[in-house]
Length: 103
Image (cartoon, rainbow, N blue to C red; front, side, top):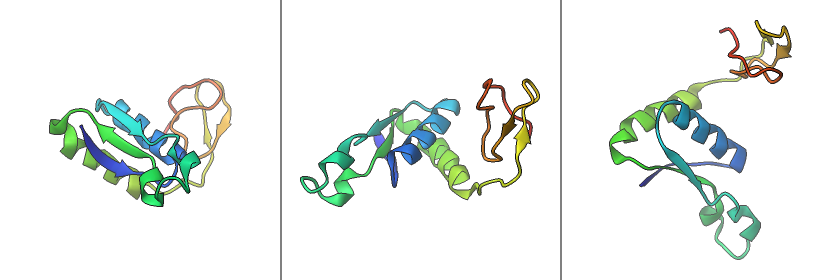
């Protein structure tokens, strides 16, 4: 196993974990609850970390991470083709029905 990303917070780690899993890369989050131990642990040791299970997927994981970090938030709302619900521009799936949103 290898650490490929140190997140600023748990939602950031979870989002990247999910993106890696969607790309076929087995990933795990470590230190998910360590922020509660601040003061007992050094700050750097409390950040959530995303680790990959297979070392041969490291280059692919870094490509997914780079793509994630370059994505800026989309400002335009997107309408779901399935349920016609309005979604924030940065969503990839409809919050209401889970269908993939149009690009």
